[in-house]
Length: 320
Length: 210
Image (cartoon, rainbow over all chains, first blue to last red; front, top):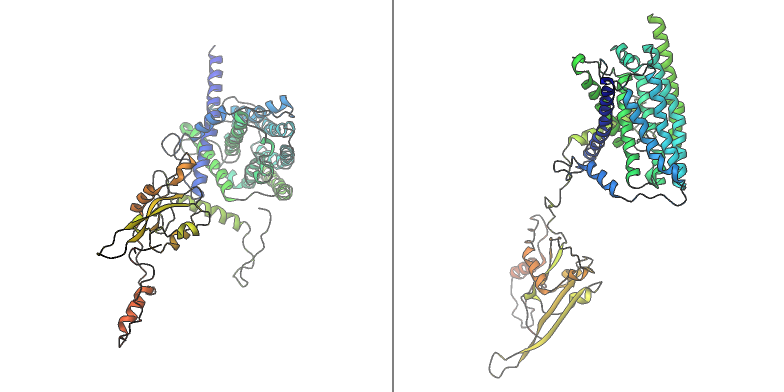
């Protein structure tokens, strides 16, 4: 009985984090981006510096009419937002936040599981693009597919480098194995992983699939109301997952002073810093063109990731 | 990101090639620096904007100065000024004198739904009866209410700011220059045909036939 209760509590905690953290990131983006552009951002909702802006947005989206275009593939069209959003919830369950079992569920091949499930999220965009019966959506969906092809590989290679270094695929064990000198050792891999992750989330400057100035909003063009909001939520949930995953793999997760009692705080702090970097990059850089995007993946990121794997292998062999 | 921007540095700098990624770091520095500064936003409904002294908000009518000469209505490019008037006769002031007629303003209205804020009416008024006021908060729910009648136009006059002081380094106003020249003239010629130095357009309200 207590087992069931414990599982239920853990899942509830993960669900709460899943619902709250993306909103926090979204609000941080509203404000940080505004101030980086010399603006104030939302100031009214909720009274104090617009803290309730995203709640207000959610209420607005919920009120809107849910439209399915006449020519659309109805079932697939309606299912796509869930396919885009749910993988991130599943990933969040296995991400270790603190030591001593501070994790929704320990999975032995956690790294493998996480990367496989995160890839499913992109399928939502593909389904949306294909089912919308709209040129812009289709273009956006195909660009998403091309981006997935190009950036999944460097991401996997960089993650493989960490797995080689730690000698395990389990996420908590990877963090356990972490030593401070992994930071310079895996730095290139970390950069590649983070950049490729950004590209998979279609965040600026890699937002060619949703480039609003040329293809409206890519695969999400035809969506309205709550389903549209779910796609947006998926983007921010993706940021949370990517930042936490990068923290766990490359920044040593809960390691830090007093990590026994405050480990979870370290993970969250590092993740928050990374989320800020995500917002910062979005504000600072213009969008990459489609060909630049592909060239960047195939001629820069993949060679870098391969070099990182070679370096990891050499150090592992020499160190033993 | 992957593209090398054409390097336009002045030739002869210390290092021929710059560090790769320098531009990227610079971009990040710019946004971060902007974030630490105070933002420039005026929170309008809460804080009123500081408008420059010659802002064109609304047109005020100083109807005491108006002689119904109709110049403004005729010069208006989109015909948004409506003027009605009638003539009254003023009895002779001296016994045996002639009766005079004068114009009396009945209606003066500006349709701000048509007005394009060109300011030609204000420029063209020879009697200084029209003025710019910086007030701008007169949106209406009904477009017909944007036609401001005489009373409302008169009310705007209270919001007209005093004209900004002349630039001390600027040129002397024409009227002053002309008056000074006349005063400094060495020998005043006693000729009956001399023009009485008329200050350009800024004369007192004249009564007389239209």
